[in-house]
Length: 247
Image 1 (cartoon, rainbow, N blue to C red):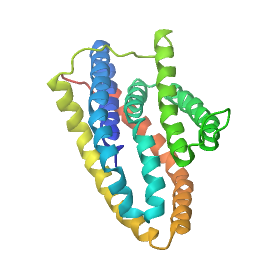
Image 2 (tube, helix red, strand yellow; image 1 turned 180 degrees about the vertical axis):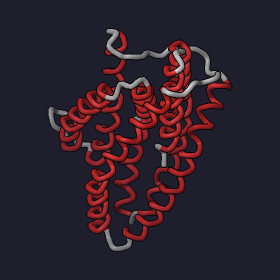
Image 3 (cartoon, rainbow, N blue to C red; image 1 turned 120 degrees about the vertical axis):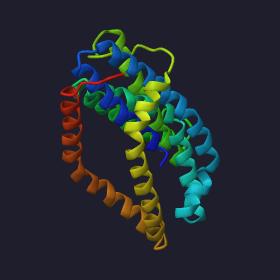
Image 4 (cartoon, rainbow, N blue to C red; image 1 turned 30 degrees about the vertical axis):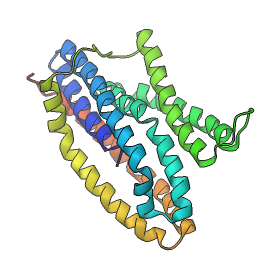
């Protein structure tokens, strides 16, 4: 549920940049990109503040007392990476809107490798670091988003990105268009997340082992959705490039 604002941004950014580039208005695309990065940071900070304060209450809805403690630790660690996550989503959406899907894929692969390496180090306290357990698992995931964001910055400085943002003050017009495009999918995500929370809370009544097994099953099931997501992104980008934009 805390990811929902990020999905709102990616939808609006990808569509607006695809339409701007399709209309031959590259500077407009760069401006929208830059304003979207500012918006991502501006939205993420209050979400992190709110999330940290309600994390335990949210986890308690689903889990028993023992799992609530560990689940809260993990959720707080993940929330610390939310600013980088939102900006990372925004950058990826901008590149995909510019018809570059390979760079986000490559950066994501590197980020996952970084996460895999960092996980055991933070979880089990290797290389002289303290043993952080579940909190370390969440922290490794958060740090991987900062790593991927830094990698994007390096590529941008070296001129290896197909489009770079032109950062300036966020305008009401850009905000309105992003919200217009992104809010419907945000509402959809909120409804799906809320229903899933209720559903998972029912599974949790059968015990922590059943809950963990169910989550593993969901991860495996998500592989089936990947081709559909790929076609969705490709279709949105190609159609957007064929439309004119008025801003």
